[in-house]
Length: 111
Image (tube, rainbow, N blue to C red; front, side, top):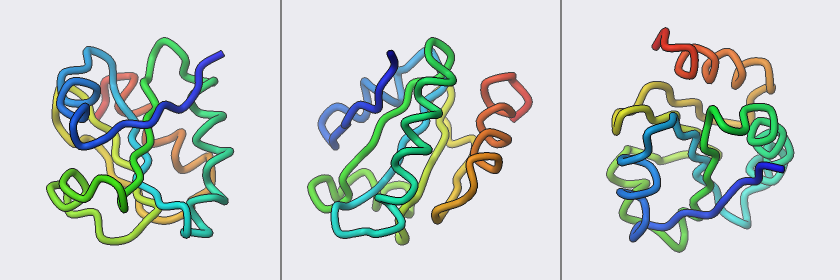
């Protein structure tokens, strides 16, 4: 069963930018209510796309460098990377269908 793995500033380069598969990263914080609300959806996506998409999460309080590098000001903030590039960015607790649409575009090579 695929799960959501935590990533930090120190492992971001290797886990995200050098990944051969697309990566969805959820920028969040423990005090963020909408972040907690979207967490089960992010977990479902990890399972739905197992083997096709790597799903990671980053606590913005513990890892300030990466969020500032990508202009993350509001959370939850989900960014889809592929080939070391930002392909999609979704801010806020959005419906699963909206996330799936963005992910499918990247995973299926349309982004």
